[in-house]
Length: 353
Image 1 (cartoon, rainbow, N blue to C red):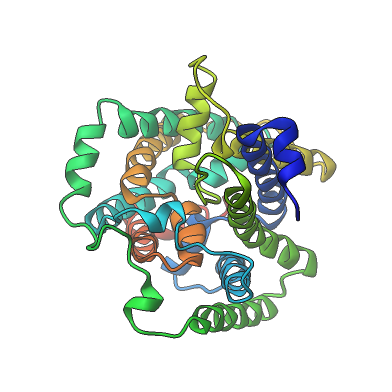
Image 2: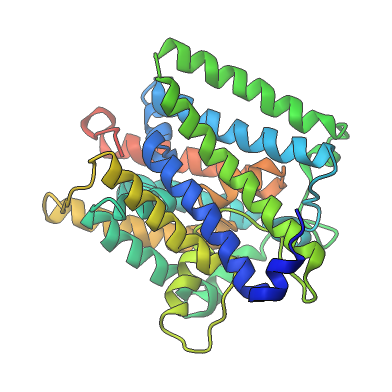
């Protein structure tokens, strides 16, 4: 695909924003139709079940791994200089931030990506939680919470000035990533068969994982023709939520992949919900759920920024390139989510996102 004519016509920054919009559109539609949600999967797993929520999450994750690793083996993609790999990773940030994010997503009844999808379908609870999440994420990036985030992140960092490549660290061949992805996909398909998940839902669940791979592919392709340096990145919602918020508040903000991503998700989810006749306004059921959601959003905003990514950014995008801190953050999110669900009473809490 020759991107030079497009870049010359609209510019590098608008092209990056356009690619973010396309990635977000695909994610928004696929996530809304598949009901993809890490919170729901962790809650289901915490209660001793391996049903549709876990199956959908595993299928999404494995699809991202297979597409990304397959593209790298074929020479179509190189994520060695991706944003998450090219800078030092924080082990302490992954652990502390992951635990906070996981616990927060249970309180808020959805991770940051899921809140964005639900907000576009009329869920007022998610709109409130999402705004709080974005504000706290921005405070953790450059505001009052930034010193605390920096301190916690620097307690334990990766060596060598880069994040750890897990496959290289354990001396596995490059093909191992693809094999791991295929094995997880087989597990996901078996769970899907047992739980009689419909074909269309499986396709849309795979679409979420494909969106993560597409984001890497588009930004990598742009980096090969752009004059200015372009970050190779993909789906994540901690930084983009904060950046999108500031884009509308600061006249000096510039277009980039992040700025297109969030509106793309909103448009995709909204359109999908309208076509499926699933758009409906929903509000908080009372003061207690509202307090929990607000506290959870704060925890996710700080935790996601500290962990280096949200459930999508670290859990799917970072996991698909085998970034060491991303896998640790994902594990911590599962532990944090399961622990919080247990503290809240387990079976008394609804699983559905």
